Structures are given as C-alpha cells and as structure tokens.
Length: 180
Image (cartoon, rainbow, N blue to C red; front, top):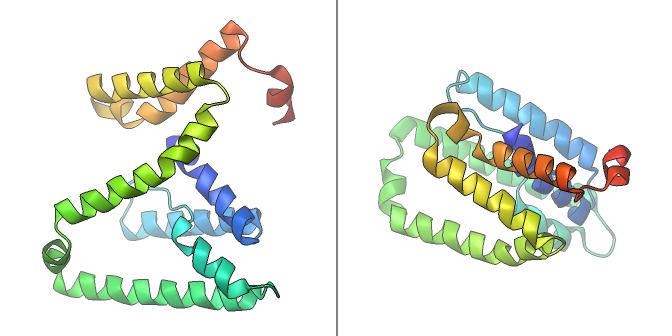
C-alpha cells in the first residue's frame, strides 16, 4: 500500500502529460512489478512505476501530429537498450558502475532530482500546510525511531495518521472522499 501511495502520482500523472491512457500505464506497471518480483524471487519488495525520464522525448517525438507510434517505438528502443545493459551488468558485475559513477555522483544526481521536484511538492502542500507538515513530521519520526516493519512502512503510516487526524478535526471533505 505504501508503494501505491508513493508511486501512484507518477504512474497516473506521466500518462496524462504524455497523452497515453493511464489505465494502460497502470496495467503495465503492475505487470512489470509482478515480473520483477518473480525474477528476484520476491527478495526485493518493489513497485515499478512510470518514469518522468521519458516525458520530454515522448512529447518531442509526438510533435504536432501526435504520432503515438513513434513515441512508443522510442520507449521500446530505450527499454531494449536498458535490458541489454542489464544483461551485461548481470554477466560482468556491477563494480564498473560504482567506478564510473561513485556514490558521490549518484547521490548528487538524486539530490538534484529531489530539489527539482521540491517546487511540485510545495505547490501540492500549499493547499493545507498544516496537514502537509504533520504528514512529513509523522513520517520522519516513525522512520527515525522505528525498526522492522513499522520503519519500512513509514510513508503509509504517516499518510494514515494524518488522514485520521484530518477526519477527526474536520479537515477532510466528506464529498471528496465519497467521490472516490
């Protein structure tokens, strides 16, 4: 459930931005997740959502005539290339990646992605700073103080706790909940 909360926004938003049907993206996201779990023998829990990495190339390739076939061909080619790289890494190991991109490089890239997305998070949080900050605080406290299962579901627990508090304090719109 935590992965659904964390990834649904991207998995639903990316197809809306690119013009693909969200239901198709969710279906293939689920299929990809099942394949991943089978291949890893369920040792690495993960949810595979869509990626923002393809938004600009897809929009550019579709152009004014909205050639979705061209965009899908590009996505397929990128997927095939990533698959081949995965086979190479599986055969020769991952150490070369660590030498090519040491943790300081990958950490910086992740930090830049987070900073670039901060404005999106701030716009979403602006609708109600109180509950947004409460959710973040609950997540941080649970993640920092809990071990085991509760520590791993800190995002889900933070959302759940804040949702319950919002329901009790009247910060939850019953009409919007009923519409779900």
